[in-house]
Length: 180
Image (cartoon, rainbow, N blue to C red; front, side):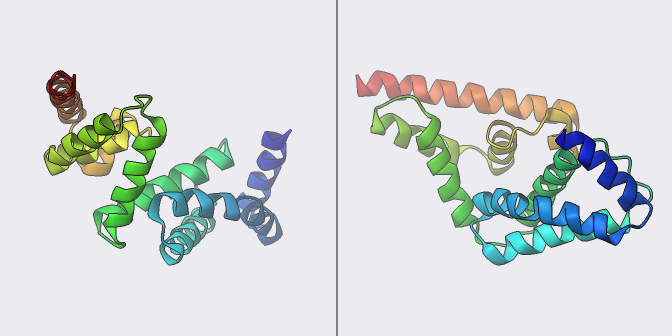
């Protein structure tokens, strides 16, 4: 049902219907803003990114081949956020804090020492490896998306992910032995 109404909106937008575009904008703006804000913790940056996504959508409306408006808009917002991250358009300390909170929320281990150890081990990873791990595990980027975003080969992403996981496992194993 929602997909059908989005398809009608997309058809109208492609023909230059500003009212249909406004309807799409109103439907998704708040959710996109919340999505970006949860990652950036910056209201100004989040507003800018969402505005850029919609401006780009409108400017490219005639050539876009969008099947699912929601998925397309969220993917654009995610990529725009990571472009801003790479350009350091916001305080990266908030991202690190959000990263730590995400780990704490999703690590099933109830041992706070283990969580602290995990964060320490992740911080000890080389910067690029840490970024690849974050994009993969916490932003659900595919290998292809990471490679495209970071301008590296798919194989490099695979290799760095493997090394990151191997390094974290080894570090956690050593930590577990010293904790017990």
